Length: 198
Image (cartoon, rainbow, N blue to C red; front, side, top):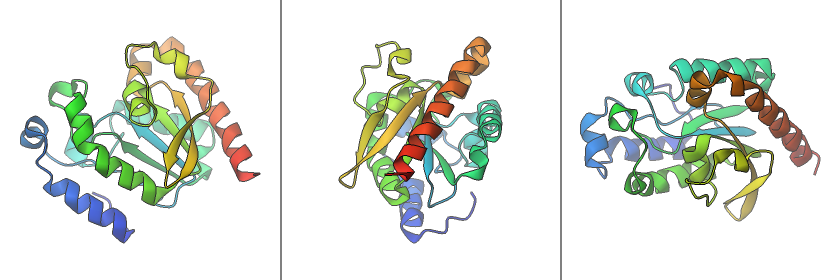
């Protein structure tokens, strides 16, 4: 785990490390997966839950999906921005299954407090579960309907714009959809510029 500088974030991380609310997750995890990146970010990327590589390293988005996300970040020059990457869940669901509603509920407080401290200008939701943790969204609705719109997540009484795009793991299985992600990231950067100019 990369050193956390912010004392409030460190406190939450220590709580997450001791958390035993989800029996299936706690008994199978190798590491909790908290976040990586700038702790005073302009952009926060929110994914769903850690996979096997993340569980081993204790860092989000370090496997094949993470390498693809890093490629997009570099391609769009987002690496020149201050950004942070995290997941809705802090522990890997066994066999990479979808998070259960009660697991998301158990992790919710950590997630909300982490975002309050990070206080980004904009959030990029990667996939339906990351998005559903930010915006009230029926997971049976086609996720594409959430794209090309600005949604808002209420954080400390402030509405933060949320842009939805596909999860890198989905794109690894559906490579023809990658152009849509690039388009979504361009849209996000345009919205970030609007926030800065307010």
